[in-house]
Image (cartoon, rainbow, N blue to C red; front, side, top):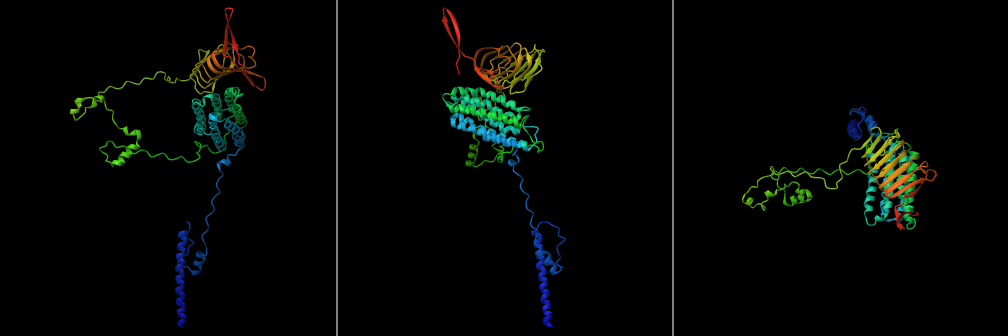
Amino acid sequence: MASAQQGMHNLTTILKRLEAVTSRLEDVAVSSSSPAPTTSLKSPTSSTHDNVAGHVAAPPAPPPPPPPAPPAAEEAASTPAIKAYEDEIIHGSLRDFIEKADELGGPVKEHSSLLPALCEAQLSFLKLASNHSKPTALGPLLEPQGKAIQAILESKDKLSRTKEGRDWNVCFNTLGEGVPAWGWVQVEPAPAPYVAEMKNAAQFWSDRVIKQYKETNPAAVAWAKAFSQLLTSLQAYVKQWHTTGVAWNPRGPPAPSSVPSASPSAPPPPPPPPMAASSASAPAAGGAAALLADLNKGGAVTAGLKKVDKSQMTHKNPDLRSSAVVPDNSASAKKAPPLKPKPGAAPPKKPAKFALEDGNKWMIEYQEDNKDIVIDQTELHQTVHIFSCKNSVVKIGGKINAVTMVGCKKMAIILDSAVSSLSITSSPSFEVQITGTIPTVQIDTTDSGQVYLSKECMETVEIITSKTSSINISVPTGQDGDFEERPVPEQMKSKVVKGKLITEIIEHAG
């Protein structure tokens, strides 16, 4: 009987210890698992079987698997238009152009190597456009392409001034006149004709490269033809995939405010510590530390110094040496006269003007980088006067009396018809296209110009030139709108025959 009671006592002790262990296991499970309802936890007074079966045997549920990563932007942007740009431009005409530039070498290779960065920047922009809807402002998104174009133009000016690059100006001008074609992304509603205009501007210089090097440097000729083919491919691509402008995705999310960079930009440097109001109010730093701090300021170390007037200099005024205090004459000092502009400095920019005056005079003045000057409501008695404009395009529809252009640079005129004449004076690097008829074209004191004639004015037009150089007349050949370029002679030969001066024109066959 005593042994039975002792066995019951031992069993009770074991059950109490098991309940204590189970309670500890419950606490550990609660603290290590994620937050969840605790109503299913057993109390210490529950049976040992329930505690062990409900909490010790059931492990916590595993966490759910992470969601799959979204597709990369590169894969999402693989539209037919993007693939066409990669195949036809990046891996097609551009690659051939760079290969020809490598074969040519020298400064032209260095200049041409900047073009792939522009094409890659445009490809990134087109990928962004294929995934997003059109934003209200395109400026920040076009900034990488603008910087790439600016780098090419700056390189053109820099290389043309070097000793090695002076002989390659025609190549630099070819690329410089054609690279604005990549600005079609901001032209609406017809960007393809804009690319064609830039192609024609580059074709003028490309033809000169071919003419100059066709006998001496075949690599230069191949380079010029490859660049013309690149512009042709770009025009065909824009015409097929972006007929009325950049093709945005109307169902996509709004476009970001700027093109995301490939790597996060470095944080800006911390602002410099504020300078003390006076040296007396700040505690004196250690000699070596103070010296190093001043040296790190560079030229700014003298920024806080005060300019001393000559009347306060003791070595120039012996009377001041006996006095311990130098008088302050800054209040009575005369003010410096205002600075005058240097001789030859550029005058202040004047406001642009485009207006019809007195009912018969169209005045276009001081226009810059304006490609959308259009005069479509014209009458026979009206005239157009273009003065001091730069890098702009003027389109004149209908039939008008006369057109004059004076003091302009890099201007383009598209003229339908004129009753009297077209006069161009002191306006280098111009382009004129006549689509109708005109009796007279007069060019005076102007270098580097191109005139495209229509079939209608071939038999009636007269072209008068004076003090000009590098003037070319392009006549239609009747084959798919192609033109054949004819240079205007620049040399004269005079001789005296029986007391009379006879002058003849010297023409160079190309």
